[in-house]
Image 1 (cartoon, rainbow, N blue to C red):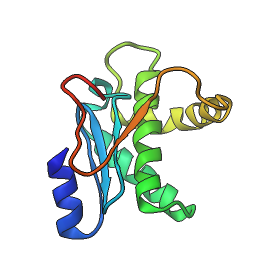
Image 2: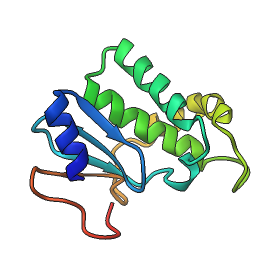
Image 3: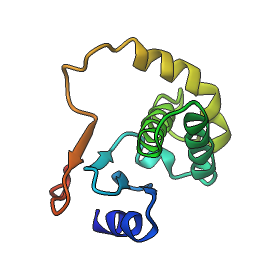
Image 4: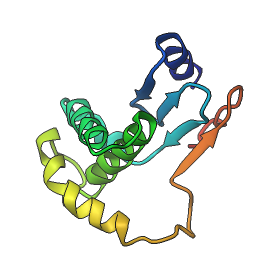
Length: 130
């Protein structure tokens, strides 16, 4: 988590660090953490798809931290909802975005497990916590 924060601070930008878990760091804002789609986002090219989705959200008017967070969640969920448990490729993801976005919109207020967690500066997720 500290490397994402350090990069964001040094470069003065928002940083999305894709991994297990994925992280979004931006200035003094709390670190945003997601475990959605961790292993499913490993195939080559998924980072390119993620970047394109961030660009689309930026063009729609979201702030950089919100665009990165939304893209991190939508691409992760799109990877997880694959009809096949293994074997998808990056090119499969964009076709799933409309369905995933519709499902997310229909969720309403979340009452179940938290998908994202925020950690203030100096705090970090415990081992295995995302």
